[in-house]
Image (cartoon, rainbow, N blue to C red):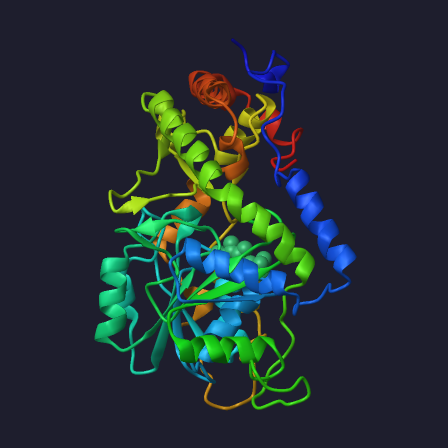
Length: 420
Ligand SMILES: *Cc1c(COP(=O)(O)O)cnc(C)c1O
């Protein structure tokens, strides 16, 4: 069969499940808030959702907030990060993991990832620790928890505040313990494409009463929980979630376990179906990981098994076949102009100095996955095995037609955009 890229029939013409998904329950819950007249962050629905989220993750405290970025910022503030403190972060993640550090006037230190899990490499973390290192932000990339045995041991040994950025990993567990419980705080995002969503939103989990109080106070204008509206004890701001968001999230949360099971079944089925297709590698799941929500399935493309064709060509060909596969981040975070032009320091408090020369930084595993990674997003796995068969068929078709793609590479390169 010829490639759809060259005018032949595509593997698939129908759409994959879209995101987000909602039902009558969401509509009714939103209307209840509307009619209650209590639309803000002090509606008891917000506390109800926080309690449900904490219970699902077996955490003592949950404090909701406006989004996953400020969740990281308040967690860092509550952990005491201040000007010039070094905070270790991965560079293969969304920008907020690093900018939250800068927003607290801390100094992000980029450390390379493990090529298999795409999470921080524990050995690289340990090698990057200096006397100024105060904290470590671990991202559970794509929903696969990082090696929390090694990373919590390092945090303990060097007395670092460990913060988990769980924006991809709602409900995932490592060695039986839900993410968000391994350090001083775990942060989550409810942004529009995340696994539980209210369009925007975030939450901080912690098992420390003191952290919980600090996070809550910062999100609530420096108030104390049981004191007056116009009494402000510490510096804070308004980072609250609204009751409408909590109403949506409460319903979305109930759907998560079932959706996670569906995605896991489909991912494992796809794994079998593509195991013998050269050119594409799928990440394994570590035996200590359960409830992997598969936020992103990262395929590694192997040029040598695809006649040396470029990744963009592979993406174009797969898209033409009806598979909405997307490239990974275009480059590691430190290559963003924020880090390479003269926009730092983030403050003039004097003790800030870069821990690394961001301009010359080159972390090979992070660079590599930005070049050879392809993402299949979580909504693709909410359907049926037939959907997985189509993904497998498209990968096989592209692989089998690699020599032809290579011959016609220059012809295609200028005609079809890589990103729709
Ligand atoms: C989405 C995301 C965030 C931030 O979330 P927002 O709610 O969009 O602010 C933080 N970290 C990672 C890894 C993310 O993917």
